[in-house]
Length: 620
Image (cartoon, rainbow, N blue to C red; front, side, top):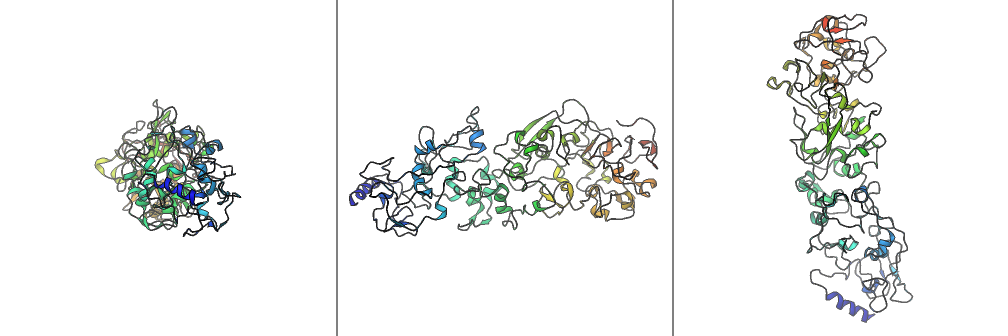
C-alpha cells in the first residue's frame, strides 16, 4: 500500500496552504498506528485507504473507496424550509449524487468502518467502535439540514429576497456551498482532512461564527442573549458565557431534539428552561416555576403546534391554540426590560414578537373588531402590549365562538363601549363613554392617581394578569389565582374563603379585603373610614352587604354600560348568575351621574327585592 499512500500524500500536500492538514492521529485516522482512542484497524497501516482508492476504479469522486450506506435516510424538514421557502425535501436520489453520502458511509452507524473496495476481501479488520455522538443514524431530521439550497435573502417563492437573515458565505470564507444552487453539504462546515478546530470544523465556531456565516439574525447583536455575560457551562463543554456560546445555547447542529423542528436542544419550552428553568441561570428569570402555577398559559401542555414563521391566524385557531415561549418572545431580538406604568407600550422583552391592531369600522358598541392589521414589534414606541394579546384572545384567532372560559377581548375593548379599562383607549378617548369619563384622583392608587393626567393614562393587560407574587418575574406566565390575576391582591369575584366579595367586607374590615380584593390594587375604595364612591357609602348598600357582582360585570375588561355596570339581561361570564337573589346582576337600568360621586336612587333601576326603582332615561 506504500504507492497509494505516496500518491495521496502528493495530492494532499499540493493543496493550498490555507489549512493545516491534520488527519494523522485524528478521529479520521483509522490506521493501526493512530494514536487516538476509538476505532482503528488491527493491522492496516494506510491512513488514506479508508476513504480513498488510489489505483482501482472509484465508485464516486474523489477517488472514493467506501461502500454505499444501505440505509434509507429520513431528512430534515420544517415549515420554514418546505412551506414558507417552498423548498422540496431531499430524496435518496439527491443523497446518492452528493458529497454528504460519502460522510454517511461511516456516520450512519450501520456501514462497517472497514468496508472498502481497494483491498481484498473488501473488509479491513477493525477494533473499537464509534462514539454515540459520532453516529448520526438514519434519521437526519434532528441534524442541521443538508442537501437544501442556501437562498440569499430567502423569502417565499412569490417574494424572493425578502428575508435578509439568510446569506451566502463570502467567496473567501471557509464555509462552502456547492453547485449552481448553493447546496449545503456536510463539507460545508466540516473538513474531513483537518481537525485543527475540533470536530473537523472548517473554522473556529467561537461566538457561533460558523452559524452566523449564513444566519444573520436581524438585531441579534443587540439582543439580551447576544450581550449576556452570564457564566454558562454547556453540557460536555468548557465554561463560557451566554453571549459567546450564542446560537449554540439553544440549537444543536447534530442530535437536536426530535420533539421540535429547528434543531433546538429540547422541546421549545425546555430549550428556554436551559437558562430560564428552576434554578435559573444566574442573571436569568425563572419562568418554569411560574408555568407550574394553577393558572397559566398552556406552554407545557400543548406541543408540536407552533410553526416558524406564523404570519397570520391560520395556525392560531381552535384546534391549534398554543402559547409557546416564541409566541410572545423573539429570542433573537428581545432585550431586557419590561413596560413602564402607566402606559400600554411594549417593553423590550417583546421586541421582535408580533400582534394585531383591531379596526372597528362603524361606531357600534359591543361589537367585535371588523379587521386586524399585523404589527411586528420593531421598537418600544409604536407598538402596544394589547396587540400581542389580541393575536390569540380575539376572533382573529378563534373565529366567532370563543373557547370555553374565554371571551373576545376586541368586543370588550371596543372604543364605542360605554366603559372599559384603558388598555386600548384612555378613559378620555373612549368614544362611547359620556362625561365625566375619568375617575377622580382620590378614587385611584399610585401610579394611576396623578391628577394632572387623569383620564389620559393607559395600562397593559399584564398590569392585571401576571404572577400572584410581586417579586416574581413580570408577565403573564402563571399565577396561583384564576384568570392569571396579578398580586398582591388577587381574589375576584370571590374572597379567599370562597364567598363573593361584598361592601360589608370593606365596611367591616372583613375577609382581609384590603390585602386580598383584586380591585384594590388600583382602586382604594375605602379611605379613612369613608368610601371613595358615594354609591358604595349608602347605608342600604354597605349595611346589607351588597355583592360587588350584583352591579358590576364579572369580567371587568369593558361593559355596554358606564362604570362597568352590568344588566340583569347580560349573559355569562359577565353575569355571575348565582343562585341567591344578589349573587347575580339585578340592575335593569343605569344612568351615569353628572359628577363622580353624585349618584342617587334615580340613577339605578332594579325590580329585585330590596332594590329601588329609578326614573328617567337609562343607558341602553
